[in-house]
Image 1: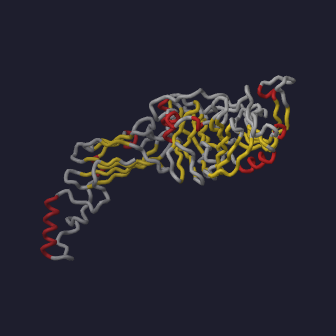
Image 2: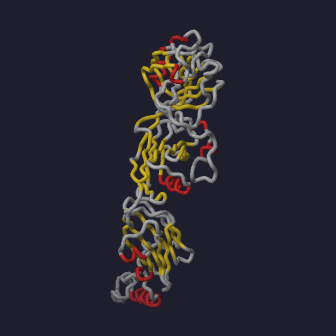
Image 3: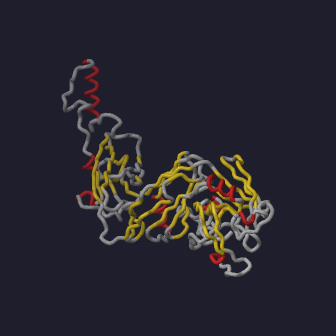
Length: 433
């Protein structure tokens, strides 16, 4: 990052001689004898005068000055010596083009970095100065940073896999090591970048010590491109913990597809880009097995799933026990809640809630739903007697947090997150119909 204390640039025009009186005299003589005549020799012409050497007026951090590798734990410092000069601008970048943020004192006497340096990196520093007469100077130096002998690497894995998703799909970041300290989390969060086209407001939320989710304030726009990348490589996160590699991720979104199930009306309405495209009679969870309210996100689709009551604690042989082949199953929780074909409950679809938590419909409607939705699409349940969908741990319930509470899960805000603690993920355990 560049911090300038003056509007003057070292490249704004030809360097002026340090002796203003001599320059004025030469200029007057040029005017007197006419254009195109050189009255001052090459040593006195203002356009050929050598700029003053900024290097002699600057002092760099010791390792930069003596050619040794600099300690990335220490800030880069540049000081103007007491010879009348001042620093006007500093730009420091690494080989990847990442800028180093810094602060310049009001009097131009000192600049120091405010963002951490990366380990094992090459930096180029460009310093602009001016002397007492306002003559500009420029100094460019390069230096290397050392690599700590003992360190642990923090790698980042973005998710989901590259592809096209619904507008409810969060971006995830899995860390290779836990990060608990808030200051260390802030370092990580600042380095993890998510951008979309069209651009929308968004933020990271720490799910636990090793996982972050990123979502916009509202759903992603339809047909957007979302890119995630990390600037963490080589950056110190905590004591003996340094940023490692991360493969960038690009996602696209499809149409805005939302399926809204009214459990009290036993009906699901599917919207595409705000327009209703289908209304389906359904059955949801019966008393004691009420379907979760709130926003869920499609996790995946399975043509065939065998669902057993024992998978959710129902004793085999009891009145609620079952063992069923299920087709066109669209998963919305890791614990086994699906939207699926339920031909055995055809008489209750549109009239009563008789399932064990899933949303059941005819085979034809389930096939249509299965073929219409994709991972990341929104499935919302209202007017059920069930609990609210948890924000984390059982799928993507991220949208059930208000934007205010979502922002509280960021290490870059002052408050602590609200809501229930994350649960353990229970993957691929069917929750019966």
